[in-house]
Image (cartoon, rainbow, N blue to C red; front, side, top):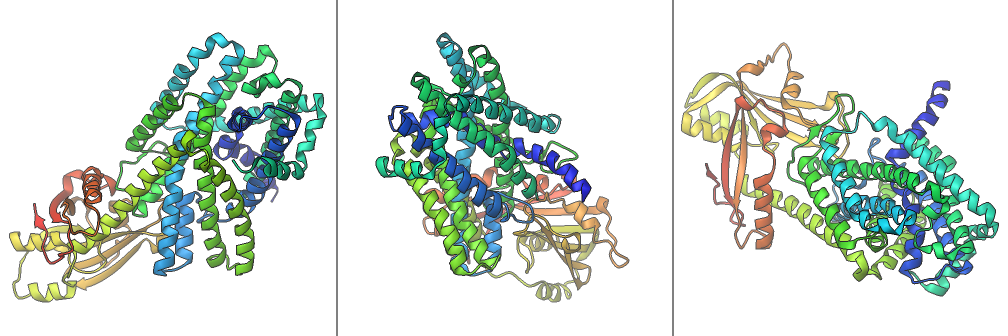
Length: 609
């Protein structure tokens, strides 16, 4: 118990960079963006209203909803929209219509999260570099080139991983939050009247006039004891500064500090925004891997960048797309203020959909009564909906950007999911049972060649096409045949005892079903080793793996629009092959191709190539 008390502060500090980097850098741009968005002068009434909204949003949304409820809604310690979607879908069972709605909401939330993953690095780094304008207006032309340089450098180092320097993230953000705390407190002392903004009446009054425009304990500890006080005092300090000096409205954050400290604060804020951006990029990697293993994204190359931290991964394809998108956002919008509506739409949209998912978890997993789940989640759905609606009012000013990204991502993920289902129905319309297959081949007495053949198939019953093809054309079967299906569960990890299920059909034919969680990296050879027993000996060196790779031909009657079939064909073509994804030894793999027409005429047999 004493050890836990001693390590809790260290864990709390570690969460500063991982969890709070994003919201921790928001003082760089939030207040000035609020004032400029509504074309409001920095009067005492406007400042108190806006700051009251900011403060009570921090208290209600983060302190109550996130720290106490959503932190509880984790899937065996894993968080994020995809993990929450899997938890909600699993809790509701296999109810078709409800499960479909939950999965659709989760996909929409994940799609908006990718918009956030693009906008956060852009707005954070831009806002930090804009501090140079405060130091000297002559340096304004350097803001965009420096921001682009930081972003390009950040994405280029992803392949090396962050394990070597990640231990510095927490202490660096600790310094950042202490600076937020101290700079805000200094100006509050100079203008204590700004503390009136803590009264929620000012937030309601502002609404009335202007309308609407696993680490749970250390995370909560860091939020309540450092992050929330630092953010609140810094925002209040900016308000106090503007009451005293309204001309500082363009960039109040950097004007909190004396002139000599502006450039050092540009450097420190740059470090903080890089850490915040890194957390978001890592979150995008993790969400993509979860989506991949849950069947919503094609197989991608995943590189583990740390031998000791299994969560340290790098996705080259996604990294390149994110880098191009972030650069495009910086060049298109040009400033942090211009990006604020895009950022607000992405964040509030994700918040709204997350709350809806929490409702299903509360009802079906936590067994909350309907009145309790409806009252709690309904309040926050209303609050999140107000913020989301306010951002939609500025759709033309930038809110379109994350919605466009979300539409592209949602379309891609749903097309892949539906395309795979149609392809599976086409490939396996009337699979032959293994028992019928064995009774049919016994009179033929095919040649049994030495070694083990492992046939990979997505089906948990029937004989794989590759196995039938091998028998038909080569008239042989291996002396030991393993029909292997890999299943990915809704849980992050599976117990070692539940990893592998074995069914012995006799005559040297087995069916293996390997189960992995959506946070695990499948390793087929390693899994097969665990099946060894006195009755089953496996020699890796004399094993041949048979995998299928499909090439689809879009048709007009597949159940999807023709352009979506073409998109699915492209995604299928560029997906990582089974050899790399399942860590199969390349020189022991035979990959057989299927040419398939996507149509409702499932009786048309696929052509083997």
